Image (cartoon, rainbow, N blue to C red):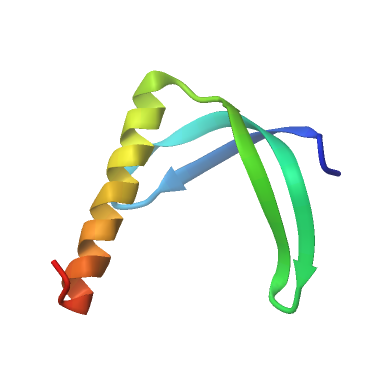
Length: 71
């Protein structure tokens, strides 16, 4: 399965109504007790989607830090 190109379509609810539609390559697959984990390398992401995802990740970090009292 590693090396396979895949298309990912996902949403970030409460953040953006539209779906993200990106391409990725599976780099590693590992099985664990909670299920299967995939490590992927995004190969095709529009600049607009990249900026939105980066903003989401940054906002979530700020929220986690605030919840832990480290902001």
